[in-house]
Image 1 (cartoon, helix red, strand yellow):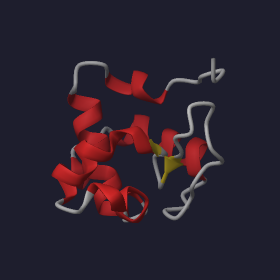
Image 2 (image 1 turned 45 degrees about the vertical axis):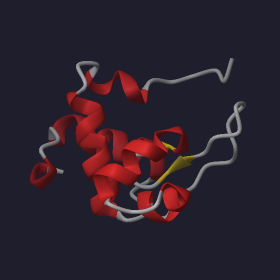
Image 3 (image 1 turned 90 degrees about the vertical axis):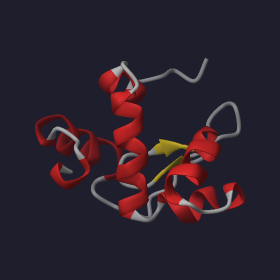
Image 4 (image 1 turned 180 degrees about the vertical axis):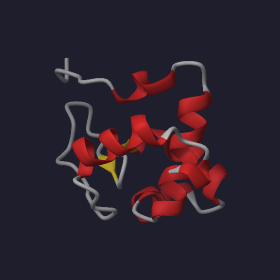
Length: 94
């Protein structure tokens, strides 16, 4: 987490809460058909950002985000977007 510029005190909790530290975790489909992927459960709707950040095809979003390094790089960008940890808010799916 520290290596990727993420605050450990915030993201160690998110990592445990979201995936129990399982880099290969993929959620059941959300109400909109997307899935949450990897250590920090990055949503598959971020496929373009993931492809650009991790230099992989957008069609490989699940494979990309189950790579811990890619997952943390994308999380760093989402963290720095000015919304902080609000990208990891609890949603009712509505």
